[in-house]
Length: 285
Image 1: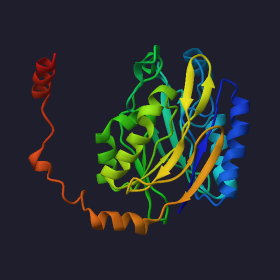
Image 2 (image 1 turned 60 degrees about the horizontal axis):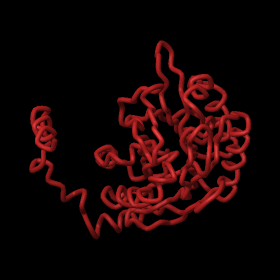
Image 3 (image 1 turned 180 degrees about the horizontal axis):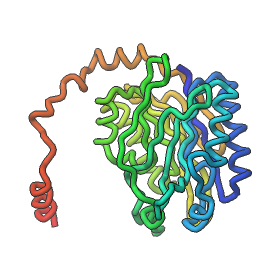
């Protein structure tokens, strides 16, 4: 299956962002992509106030547009993520939606791990305006033989999420992101390739690139890599798309050569209980 990743420089103008996304999705589809992946917060990227003001429900303008693009081009479209306003919720969700070739909503994933960090002197506090998701989500891509696992950006640093997706049958995991330039230079490709290698899956990572108000500076380097950890294609810098073939036979070959998933012995390393983890934390202080 041909998969495309879209790299954008989204900002606070929703109309411009939607226009840019539509053109890039069409470009990837015209290059043969059967699945296209948009980056994190592609319809609107800006200050917490901007996101709060511009948040939408699932049937708002951004997701309605994405559904129409999927149907028009007859493709699967992973609509990156957007700031979702849910009924009776004080905080927003950072939500990724998978659309089918007929424009139907196939799966919804809400980002589990919120980006509350200080990076290169800049503080990010997603939890101030967003609440974490609670559900691991994967979904089959029709009759293609692919099962898609859904993650968003900071989730990349939590290997247990990727392992669970793999054990549930995901053989292609999407990582729509706005990964910062500072951390991206050191960690982006390393972590993506590691998640692909250890879980023996394809990874499709679509990143934002460049600056956006008030303090965003995203790394770009959107890429596709295979189960061996080989980068199949990338958008090194600037706005653009990259398309590559994800061949299930190559994935099967890797799993046959190194049957790491089948060789797991979970009975030998059960998850620690709450009391054990508390003692370990105390011992580390």
